[in-house]
Length: 275
Image 1 (spheres, one colour):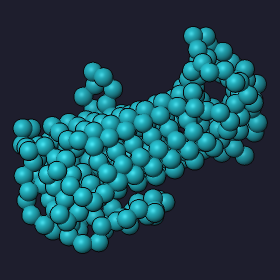
Image 2 (image 1 turned 180 degrees about the horizontal axis):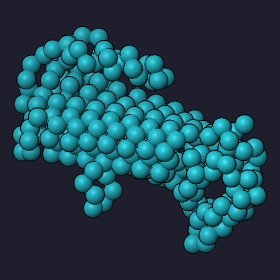
Image 3 (image 1 turned 60 degrees about the horizontal axis):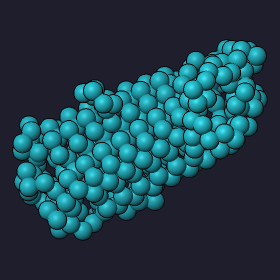
Image 4 (image 1 turned 90 degrees about the horizontal axis):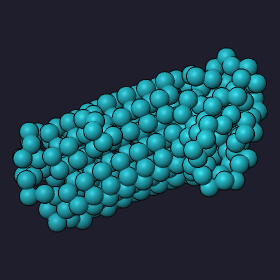
C-alpha cells in the first residue's frame, strides 16, 4: 500500500519536503511519519500539519496530491522507490536524486533533476530552467539517469551535465547544454539561442525543424543517419516517451564548441543549422 500525502494547508508560503522520500520513510510507523520535520516558510513544522497522511510506505511508494505548486524538493536526494505526483509541483524536483522513479502528471519548476546521479524522472507537463544542471559554484550537473519532459523547458537545460539523457517534447530556452561534458539532450520543439555553448563532448539533438541558432564556433561535418538515434528512440518509447516527431531521414551534424575541446555533436534535421 502506498503512502498518500494530500496537502491540506492553503498557505502561499513555500514548503520544502526534503527527506520525505520512500527510502527514508520505509519502516516508519504512521505517528513518526506525521512528526517528520519539514520547512513551512521560515518555520520547521511536522509533516501532519501540512499534509493528510494515509497508508504506509512499506512498498516504497509515496503519492502526493493537492495544491503542490509551492511545494519544493519533492524526491530530492532520493535513492530508491517511487514517487507519483498528481498535479504540478515546485522547484528542485528530484535534485541530487540517485535512484528510483518519479512521475509528475502536471508541470514542475526550476532545477528538475539538478545534479542527479541516477534514476528516472517523467513529467507530463512543462518545466522551468536548469533541468539536470549544476548548482552555482559546482562543476557537475547530472552524471547519470533519465529526465523526460512531455512539454517545454526553460533555459540552460543540461548545464555542465556529464552523463545521462534529457528529452524535451516541446521547445526549450537559451543555452541548452551550456558547458556540457558528456551525455545526451534531445529537443523536439524550437530551441533558444546558442545551444551547446562551451560544450566539450556530448550529443545534442535539435529536432524542431527550421534554422537553429548555433554559434559560429560550430562547424558542419556532413549529413548522416546516425545509428545511435534508433537505439535511443527504442529505449525512450519503452519508458513511455511518445507523441513526438522522431526524424526519419538524414540529419546534419555540427561539431563544436571549437572554443572549448570541440568534440561535441549537435544534430539537426536536414536543412537546419546556423540561423
